Every structure is written in structure tokens, then in C-alpha cells.
Length: 181
Length: 380
Image: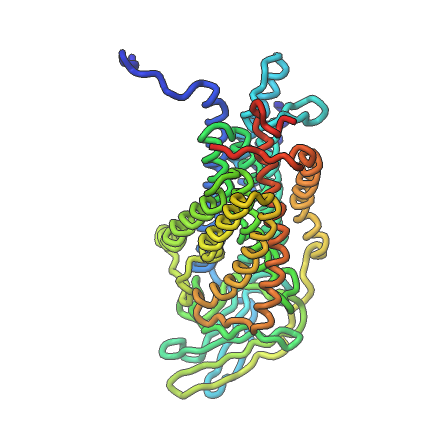
């Protein structure tokens, strides 16, 4: 009993010790940039991590020359196989409101991705692409292993249901239980 | 200070009727804390964004599981102590007692399941923390550790349902079972988001999963109560929770954002995220299921078989309604082509048959957790 409590306390302690303090939201720190020409608009694309790895989240910033004032636009992500995500509006980065961006976003799989921008502003509309954005393999264990670990409760649940089903089968068969209340 | 007053009537509830009421409600309270934390957390990610481990919604989630775990542990230890002292153990408190680790612990089945779910939640929480250390705080609901966490909550919610079902002969036991089923049904569509990992080229796996779980749990309600109102009562309570969360989730996300001084995202849908996962067609479909059970009862058909048929029909309708519901709620969402809707609805119907069959049976199994009265077939 004492051992169980100690283990519980250790788990709780570990949780608290390893966690970041509440509300400590990190500033957007750009370590790499690329340039995109979308018609008349020059655009600087910033990355808070470089190189990119699949599934690892980062902050993106999209800064048109002269700032975002009076401009709008959309972003489409094209995956390495050529499939397109839904076009999304370019919106302000939630932790850096003076520029457009995406916060804590990851690229789901490795390969050469494309970011397609459409920018509308005083000089009209323009489209440009950041092609062959390299995304490396994901770090960490293979997904199969991770999913196997995660589905253990499901396996436990199935075992429980099978055992309960077998044990109650004879009692539930034929005769109906009475209603309640 | 003496607070007793002369002439105060003693409570009308007999002592045995109250046995088990307190821990059962503490466990249900913990489940509700987790549910509130989850709807808040999901909304927070979509409307505001930045995450750390110690956001308030996360605290709700973890506190909920801690409450469930500690209450379950307390009951298991008390039961173990009672058996060692040779005192009789009331099976209405959490159901039949099973031995754990040989005969080291005596654990009522319901509390054993809820406690194990809460304990695995903590373990998956540690794994989730490690995962975020490696991959960062990209808020995807269907990451392996998140699905592990959601499955753990599911296990503890099933335990909670069993805890109340064991007290079936009391009104609070039946109401608590209804409440636990409601929490499970409100929670289930989020778990079904794990099916986003399944290829969806030919049918919408998430909608199929969501409709199957909804049909299954409504059938559990019907199979447990075994009287008119079991199915529709479960669905009505789910609709009530959906209505409350519809208001609560966006409000809580905004209030918390203001509290910590973060702006709302520029492009938010304005749609409450988790409540919009719950099938809105559930209440009318459950009413239809109820009619099916009623008709079967009048004609003397075997309810287990009736449940299969009504489950299939319900699966078809809910499976068809979910893609439409998304189009109605989210601007820019497109209705999939007719063939895709058809395959989704047909597969939902097939799994609905299974849901109706298994759900009725699970309801019966829950009934058997309660000590049998004289003359009950459960005793045979």
C-alpha cells in the first residue's frame, strides 16, 4: 500500500517537474527564411525550426514586403504527392500579430512540399509558390510501435468484453431480465 | 456547537440504499470534470491556440482522472479491508468483487475498471508529455498518445457506468447509469476522430465510427432499462449536454484567452467544436428506435432481435446525417458525392446492426452486475 502511494506520488511529481510553467508562451523565433514572389508582392516565409521534420511542430511567418496592412491572401499546402489541402486565408500569427503566420503547425509527412500563396493588395492579385520545401523523416519511434502502445487499453477493453460476454451468456440467453423502475 | 434540532425527521432513505452513493457520485463527478476539460481544450486549440502542459483545460482533464482514480482506489482498499476483517461486502457497491494479484486486493468490478482506466490515463499522460517534448505542441487530436488518453477515459467511463448499474435497484443507481451513458456518448465522437488514421477513400470512417458508437450506447440504455424511455431518455440527456456545451465551450475558450491575455485567432469558425461532433439527429433517431422497441414489445418479438433491426436503421440514418451536419455547420465544407454518402450510410447501417445487437446485450450485462432479486432470471 505504502509502495503504491509512493509510486503514485512519484508519478505526480514527475508530471509537475517535467511540465513547462503555465502560460509561458514562447516568442516566435525565426531561424530560417525563404523568399517567394507572388506577382507584384515579395513575401518572406519564416520558419522557427530548420530543417523541418515530419510531425514536428513549428511557427511559420509570412511577411509581405511593406507589411500586411491593406493586404489579404490565401495559402494552399501541396503535399509531396501533389494533393492539395483546402485553401486557407492568410491570418495573423496569434503570438506575432503584426505578420501573417501559422502557429505550432507540423507537416504530416516527409517529402518535398509546396506552399502556394495568393496575395491581394493595392497592386492587384498575385500568386507565387515556395516549391520543394524539404521535410525530413519524423523523429521518434516508428508510428506502428506508437499505435501499438496506444491501443493497449482497447485490447484490454476487448478482453474484458469477451470475458464478460462469455460469463453472462447463459444467464442472458432465453429468459428476459425484468424491466426496472 | 450543536446543530441538531429536535423533531428533525430522519432521512427517508434507508441506510443500505445510500451505501455506495458517495463514491459512485465522486467517480461520476471526476468523469464530468474530464468531459468539461475536453470540450474546453478542443475549443481552446481551435479558437486561441498556444498550448503548454498546464493549461486550465488540461488541469480539468487530469484532475478528473485523478478524482476517478483516487475514489476507485479508496473503494478497492476499503473492500479489501472489509474482506480481510471478515465483514460482508455489499455487491451493490460497484458490483461483484474480483480478486486482484491473487487475493491481495478485493476490487468491486466497476471500481476496478474505472480505477485501471484512471491509472492508465496517468501513464499515457506521461507518454503524451514525452511526445510533446519530441514533436512540440501541434494540437492534433489523433496522435497516438492522445488516442491512448482518450481510450483510458473510455475505460474509466465504462467502469463508472458499471458502478451505477450495480446499484440498479436504487433510483440513484439508475439515474447514475443514465448519466454515465450520457457522458460516454458525448465523449465517444471525439474518440472516433482516431479513425482519421483509417484510409477514407471509399467511405467516411469517422462518421461510421461516430454513428456506431451512438447507436451502441443508445441500445445499451434501452437494454439496461428494459422499459419504454431507455433509448430516448439517454439521447435526450445527451442533447441537453450538447446544448450546454454549445454555449459553454466557446465561452470558456474566450474567457480563458482574456484571462491569460491572448488574442483569439483571426479565422475561427465560430462553431463549438466538440458539441458539433455529437450527432444532432440522435434524439429523433433514438425516438424512432424507441418506437421500434415498443412495437416489438407489443407484438411479443424478442427485444434482442428488435434491437438489431432498429440499430441498423439508426446506423443508416445517423451515418447519413453526420456528413450533412458538417456541411450545415461549417461554411466551406462540401457535401461528398452521392456514392460516397451511400457507402458511408450502408457501412454505418451494417455496423449499426452490430451496435444494436451488442448494445442490448451490454445493457443486459450491466443489469447482471446488480445483485439479483428473488425470481429474477438473472439469478438462474
